[in-house]
Image (cartoon, rainbow, N blue to C red; front, side, top):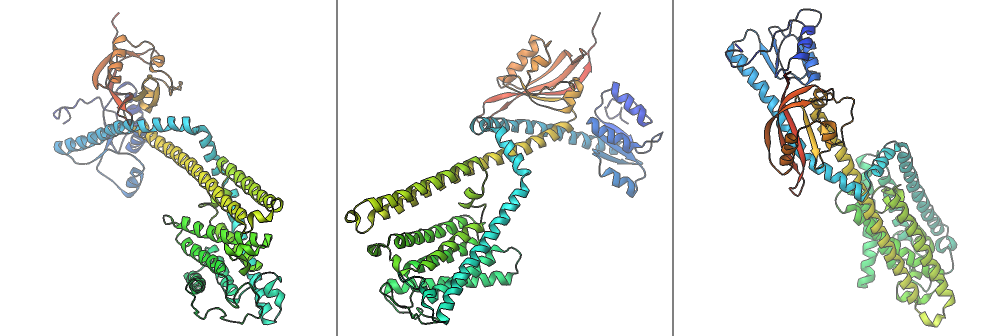
Length: 562
């Protein structure tokens, strides 16, 4: 049947041992394997060995049971031919198997063309970032998972501490109202009282912060957290609306009357800066629920920073005890405990996302993050020291309304923002570099896997004729197992190549696809072969030739005349 179909049978073997012996001296395109053979081993053992040698096979059998099918699942069989069969069935099985074989060869060329991006990206990474350092960082972080878990647990505990601290402030304020203890409500004779609506907002936002910090609570708790956010947002928004529109919406004293009234604020109403801070914190927690959506984490941090900025302005006003600062921001309408609670709530929100946004600078172990943190600490420390020195050593008449201090606050804010932005950008660049390295590693593993299973010798060379990749068949057929050829010159590996072959390689390097035969090509042991194959160029992203691919279709021992 094979003769009539135009094929050339290379021989017949009846056992596993004779098959392997024949394959050592005979090159074949495909093997037809019967399931039942003489000896202890079956056709499945032959197919398993053919898989290792990258030779396609067709299984021929008249009996298939469940155990056989189970073993076949772990093997690569190019075709299946049940008995009895006729000539058309045999022809179809061989044609389908060889088509699969051809598709595998085509895939090699596609993968080889894709090497261009890997080489260029790797070179760019070496020049720009240093691939070896990034690979070390990836390996180090892979083994540092316990440290990462410990860090996450630490931030989780800090959020709980922030919640407990804020609740303690609120409880002290409630005790002051219940037992009529002025110092618990005011905490100081200078400044405003801790308003009842502020206490209520502290409780609502502390509850919401605690819920958002937990990950194993039921949807009911999550809904309660959302309700608390919205309630705090409503109280603060209505308070701001009252101050802006001069309306009285009846929400100043919801639960208790303010018995401690002074010159700094209206009784029972939280300051507009306090209301704005609560509003910003409520919005920050709201957007934090959608932190994995685009820009949500940026909005969370933006509102948190606005709240932190207003709180810092209020603290500086209390520190410098300047009533004139009321013309800029009415700090004195904010009590010191409420400023402390607002700051702790804001810090708690940042601790919710230790690996996202701004907080990634403080939780990240990259060199750029460490540099950014040092710049941040030193710049803010210097600006604060400078503000104190200017305040105490400059005549008061020169900045009666604290314009200089306000300018310093704005400068600190802008400088901090610039440092944070630059550090985050650098961390993002490093992360992209690491992801690119991982992608290249995975891509290279995939390509190596394909090349190992290619049943023909294939080699990929760069513009300097250095080896970039080589299939296992190339290594085996040219007896190069004892040589590490990657990175070495093709002409170093094959020093006896004729000038004619070198000219053909150069033509391919100039963009030409060449199908040719090479005679008397010597392997690593000096054995001579006649080689039939193809040489083709491969290109970079700018469509410039970056090297050649040598594909061997067949190799036959050369006969040398005496």
